[in-house]
Amino acid sequence: MLGFPTGILLAKLCKDEIKKWKGRMILISALSGIIIICLIFLPIEIYPYKYPAIITLIFIVIMCLTIYWKSR
Image (cartoon, rainbow, N blue to C red; front, side):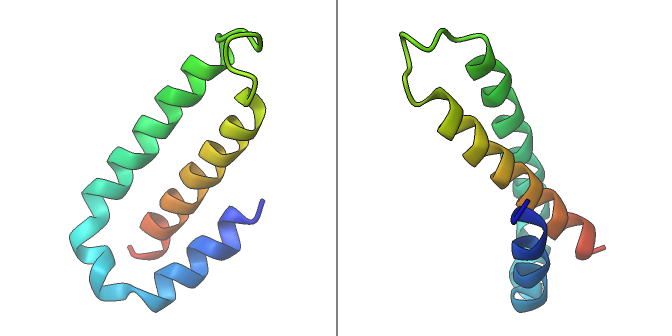
């Protein structure tokens, strides 16, 4: 759950960059969510790093959505 504090910190530090990247952050979150869904159905024998990849993508989704939410 470190995505929330990281997103809040980045939202405070990078206000002018967030204005340009709002749409891209939503796109990154959506793509990460789609990849998470695809990884869930992938067998562990094919991709042994399935769980660390899912955790990392969840972190990215939470961070991007927190930045977007705090910038509004």
